[in-house]
Image 1 (cartoon, rainbow, N blue to C red):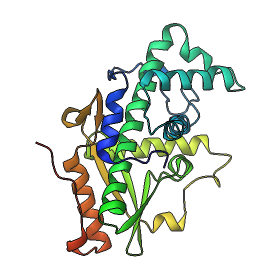
Image 2: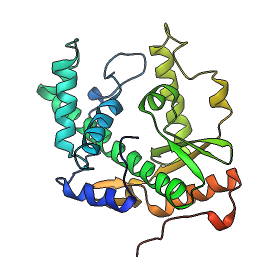
Image 3: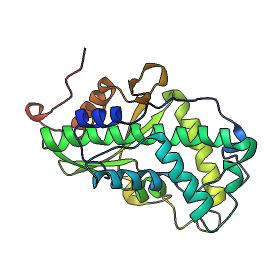
Length: 249
């Protein structure tokens, strides 16, 4: 992964950048829709991770929303060979696109924070497992994070929203992706036997009950501890070596 920090250091670095202001009001014109190529963008996580890698090599820093927005705009409107993304960053679509990039930024920080916590718990303290993240596996295999412990491999899926809504959201996303990959279905995660053998452990981020650090809504440590307990249980890790985060008052 492109960030190598303890949980405490991640929060400290996030506090060093200008405060982020979430905006949950969407302009549907800036977002993808079924049976349409409108709002379809290349994987944003590659751009987010590129800045994480840069920060790793320049003093273990994180980056501001403004820096991420500038990175996205330059990538999609200047460096990309197609000009089909330019209209999203101009005129009456720009505000909606800025909101969408803000969603990407906050989701990226929350997912990266979760990864940092899993690494600290499982690798550094319990020394019971290995935590892996790869952006290509994220966008192609739909595997946010992969954990291996006691010879057992698991997927971790972090998402925002209510658990009961998740199945419907994933079904709609799968339908959109199947339409887009109609001519390249072999380049997808469907029918992959190795993936099918990995159980998925979910963790939900409730925006109204999140850990807020400098404006960014992150997973709560209590939720992360619950996830850790479920991972330990599945891998049958001995109770004496299990480690979870002390909860802050």
